[in-house]
Length: 553
Image 1: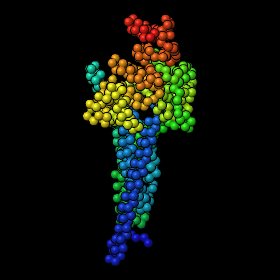
Image 2: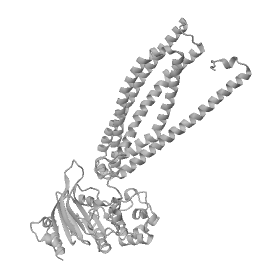
Image 3: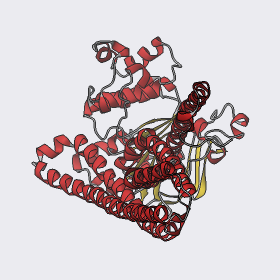
Image 4: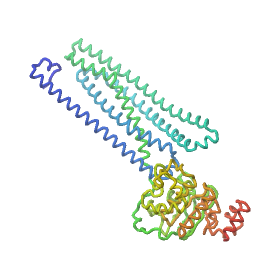
């Protein structure tokens, strides 16, 4: 039974109670549906944001080294901070407001059409112009939003770089230069931001114009219809329809359209997160072959056959046709000029750089058949720049997986003469490491990395110029500890100082990514026109005599 507006006011009191009960029922349904809609909307959107974040985090952590070589830190931080912040906080609210407004506007338009069907005459041209207007606005603002997001990345990168190099900037009186550079980067970001705001204002003006035209035509037609008596329209219903049209014309409709554009623009952040969540990963962490070689590497011999490696597909090779063989338990020094391929060889051993052709065999097993977890945990490395993780204790830095007891950790620290230093800290082994390990000197950080390697008791040790940033005393302590703790291990040492490898079993001389010489130091020094002899002579006469004497001994 249809009930006209106002029937409840003229009905008897008994029937009015039925109307009131029906109103309360509708109110309860609206409240229930509103709460359910809000809970469902926010739950789904926030859950989606969490999955996108976890997917991006996993993808970045497993990305190839090429990704980190081509993407500055600021760009990565921008994705994990600004873009994730938008998907976590701004986008759910915008989507919710948009959906609420859409249903309000659709309900208002449906009511107006039902009461004033003649407004269908003016809707098609207005809808056509609106669709065309929105297409221009969305395509423009989407690109402006993308430019604004890209403009944030250099700002993050420069702040990070400036904080890390603040001592160098002040020492060279380059503060004005960095201030000027930061202002230019900030202006570039601001231009995109203000262009986006200007586009939004332009769109809002045209929406107000469309709303004014719709309201004016609807009002004129309503007066004509009522005056001419073309349709039998209840004046109360006509007033309700016009009121709804006024609401959607002046506030609801422009606001909903702006919200829809905001949803589209904020989806750029989702697009950027998905881009970083779909990066090509490294090789698998585990493979079926890991169980076949459970005791690997029982034999620590290393054979490199025609190894060719490049950092990226569009760059020249950094290693080309490298071949050499290392017997188990030997100590190998790797020397060469800058850019000769020494560090590239280390990265190839750990499969940070995958071989383009050729192979590396350890203990007779091609390392490309193994999972990265088994390969990398079976070897220890002391890098050129020691890495300590801030926010973690000294114990967690040495034993992140809690595999060793305190006695083993103290023994490793005592072997590198760092136990007294650690005991002098407020909480000993449980003292936290400052940002970048700044509460330790570079030499102490290097010794802590050595203690970490000693704790692993690996039978293969790789040294990537570990003495390049330390003093002579620390260098001597490091070399002494290596001889004592890794006496039977295979050691590959990328050397910056020739005196650290002059008494090694073999020396590998690299140049332009190729093997120039390989042999015992005294054999290489016997060749007057050899590359290694040339490098020794360039150290000076007195140092050359000392190195030759040590090689002969």
